[in-house]
Length: 82
Image (cartoon, rainbow, N blue to C red):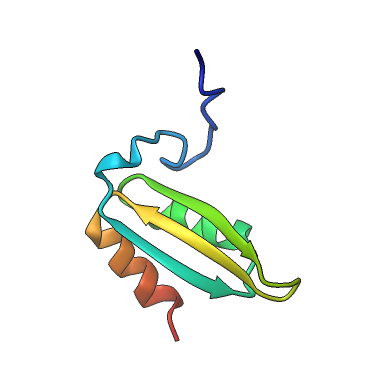
């Protein structure tokens, strides 16, 4: 049984064993997910995963971002919080 192909990216997003990841943030943003992914690929030290949440309309989306390392969630929140 296969879970499908591993997604290849410049970052660590394709290598997922999230059972041991203790850090996550749910955010609502009008920023494109692609912009956030690029920031994560260039700045995260460990593995991460970004998933789209419910549909809140065309101008706002909910994203669940999980991190393997605490330093990455701290950097992300520092960069993107108001």
